[in-house]
Picture (cartoon, rainbow, N blue to C red):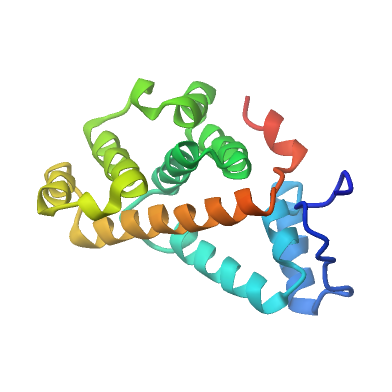
Length: 189
């Protein structure tokens, strides 16, 4: 693996990138100061990249009863349980940036139960954690706990969608040895 390769696999990026993909990468560079390695990893197949980015953008950025911070918190808790190096680093940085609280980002990565969370956040993250370790044991009482914490049924679907997405992407990232961009380590500290 070359030092700047996004994964351990030898899957060269399409070159040149299609104009729409190049524009997306340019926007990432402008807004984030980097092109996330997860996007670079998928850039060997533009259809796969577009499918990944479309699902990610829908789950993480589209209208929802969940805030962006709440969605990032779910991403980090799921990734922490799955020990996904890429997502713990990248989404831990997002939690730090969105919350303005570096300690919260660290707690999400290490042990969300040690973080100062409100009842709503605790219920949401407990559900995402249970979904990650034992999804087949989820019952109506688990969904009711979310309702009791103030989540709508639509919100519950969104929590499940974000947790499910990161359970899938964590496994892919670990399997291909996806590496986080170095820039993430110093962000929002």
